[in-house]
Amino acid sequence: MFCFFQSRAKDCVFLTHFQLCCWLAILLILSGDIHVNPGPDSSCRASSRSFVPAEGNLSIIHYNVQSCLNKKDILYGDLRNYDVLSFTETWLDAYTSSSDLSFPLFHIPFKRDRPNDAHGGILVFVKSDIFVVERRDFEVNNIECLWLELRIKGIIILIGTFNRPPNSSSAVLDSIIHRLL
Image (cartoon, rainbow, N blue to C red; front, side, top):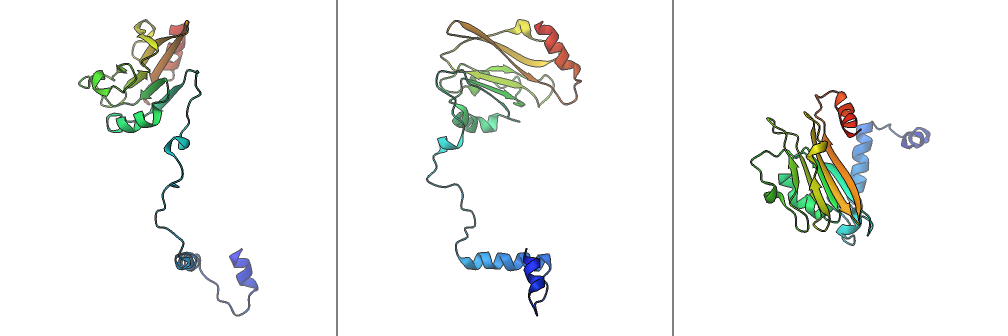
């Protein structure tokens, strides 16, 4: 649009794209109302920026966290309103105790580490007012998975969390389906 007006004006010199960008930047700076880093609107509350699950419904969220130890406080702060927190790529090992990872108002987390590898891993938190047991009988050999049985108001819900390494074949998904049948 600027080039269109520039081509219609008489006795004007054409600006290069770089010169045009510099000219526009100078105009913005001279306007006096540009902040270097304004940040979020201070009138917004933190809770309005994230999804809050509906009351009375089971809420489950899954994140690929890629190392959860250094994000533990952020994860709890953002996700504490959910009933089940499922994390993959936790990058934990056998030396990290589940009790060291606990969140207030949640059971001690269920944990599955990837053997012989610093990556991978599964961690699942369930709110303390929900009855939960781990179901190792559903696990599939050579597949990083964690099965939990939840009982809510007399209803049994089975939740599986899986982490398929990028170098594994798609046959892994078939193995999971055949195990459930």
